[in-house]
Structures are given as C-alpha cells and as structure tokens.
Amino acid sequence: MDTKFSVAVHVLILISEAPTPVNPEQMAESVGTNARSIRTALLKKAEIVDGRRGISGYSLTAAPEQLTLLQIYQAVMEEPKIHLLDIHQNPNDQCVVGRHIRPVLTDMFADIEQAFARSLADKTLADCIADIRKRI
Image (cartoon, rainbow, N blue to C red; front, side, top):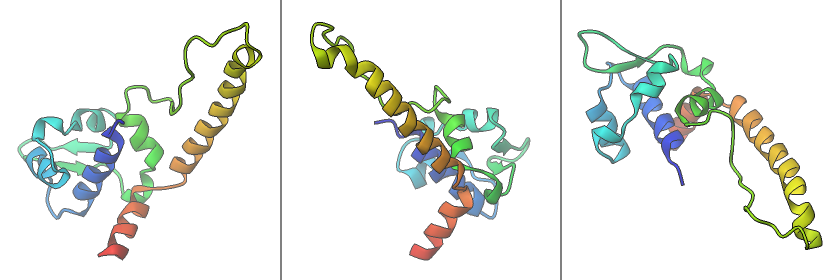
C-alpha cells in the first residue's frame, strides 16, 4: 500500500501548525522515517509548499481551509488521476463471467473512484487539523 498521501497530509499539518518553517529532518522525525523519505519536491512543484531562500524549512502557500485533500492527493501521487482499483489481467472469454467481468468492474470501479475524488474534494487540510485538535 502506498503511503505518500498520508505522509503528505501529516507533513502539511505539521508545517501548518509550526510557528516557524519546518525542515525535512523535523518532518521525518514526526512521520517516523528518515529525511530522504520526505518528498517535499512534489508539494513544492504543485505550489502547496514554499521553501524560502535563506531559511531552512517549508511553509504553506495557502491557508489550510483552501487546500483540499484532492489537491494534496493529486500533487503527491505518481498518476494524479484517481486510480484505486485494478482488474485482473486474463479473464477467460470462453467463460460467461470472464467474458463480461471487465466492463462490469470497469464501470463500477470508475464510479467508486469518482466518489472518492468528490469526497477528497469536500475535505480540507483544515478539517484534518480540526480533527487533531479535537483529539488532543
């Protein structure tokens, strides 16, 4: 299972809540990994974070209320199009199920992935921060 998305949300909450810019070592310590595993380049490329010259660390480029989980997902995943589910490769066309399974699952999986994208678009980084604050 790919954890890039959850790590990105974790790091962005950390950046958002820190009083000063956060460096990769601080991010890695919070995530529980090494600094090389923290991929800020994709977040920077998507203009979600900004690394300031002369300051060792990153800050958000927008308020957490303006940053949707869909934007974060699309920034850090290798294929920004939502792709959660795969269909097995060689169904037998001689079998009634094998002959029809691909189109049935393709349509169903597309609907599921669209619902997932809508759900991510409806949630913001601020929602995650608020939930953390409730749990503290």
